[in-house]
Image: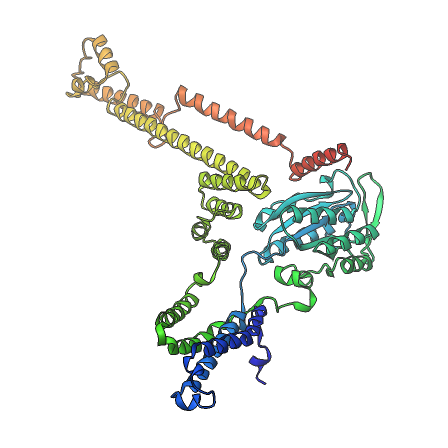
Length: 585
């Protein structure tokens, strides 16, 4: 038997029950033939085949041809399949919630330079290498808190990695059971019936194993990534005491076994992430025995039965059945063209929307945000509006992005991803507006400064024409004409009334010329050199002093701002923890 027939199966096998109707159809057809023949009442049965020309044989042939066509149609509807094709998915149903242990033990140095820095680097690699699927980040110590909800944008989650440290937690401890329960609750609230939970810690107690078993029963598999070494290292607790942290690999294996997940110790490369299956969301949800197989989908080969069915339809032209045969002839090329094109005629509306979202997501991952925005447009769903807002924000179209987020929130109120991204886009829009205003003000200042420089250059040129300010050269016959353009020079000229007489003696003339040249030299030394400009005026000095004062105030304010990237998370967790305490949780 060939491999193709060995793997033959039916995608919709329940249609095969329709073959049981063949005996009933034969009985109905045979009874109808007996009633329809008028000769049977007048001629003996043993003589009837000899009197009717090919009557019985043609009738039986028509019956068998009809039965064959019926069987072919049933087999086509049952979906015969013997080949597989890869089926890319836009959104896998395998969300991942990463729960990081931020207890005091994370500061131990058995993984140089520290467990915390190694965990941050591993999370950054996971977020960078994971192929699709939503991801969330949870931290826990004595209680569990959400750092980033489930989102398709892994870069959004990576923004918080540098702020993760034990000091952001309001209470110390290692309550892994609480982290598992909180992670499962996070996925249920997002509408996922199953998913993956990955704990980054060094040990798990009996309560954590019980929580993992409960989560696995609900469809959420729990895996563990071991932090530390068996020898361990000392660390200082929040209250100043010295503790020692060791990797308890046995307890983490038991946790993974109870949670139907996997365990792997932290390694320098990505071998641990591959062993856990978190880089490929499809493999992660399938388990050990099905890796690589569910990535392929069986092809529906039922369309190959349409040509022989059409050939049988050609025989139905008799007795007004031409319309049925013509319909069969039209359906085959239509089905082939639909399969060769985008398959839209074979898809339901929800499948068509899914294909468009898949196209948009692929374009978004490649950085083609314009194509992604067009693909997400026209789809009336909160996820589509949210993804469209992300694509618009990446293009700098902040107003349209905010409108898209509003549409998503209108259809799904409380959508945490849309709320967070809307706030980020609003902040970016404000910064953009402020930057534009600053550039405009700077441009206006440059124009004002250039205008003042031109005025100073013109004033300097006028001073060069008159060697001494307010005094004309009596030997220049055009001095009177130039003085008409300068009111100050004209008034001084009128005050003098008469020009000084020219010396008649050559020696006196030479002495006067030397004195004039000395005055010109002194005047030029007092004037600014060309290109340096004159000292700033009172208005420019005032503006410069005001700008300098504003800059100094800004620098002083920035120096007062503490360099604390985890301050926002610390305040958020403290408020959340206080609320839980008030509610008795």
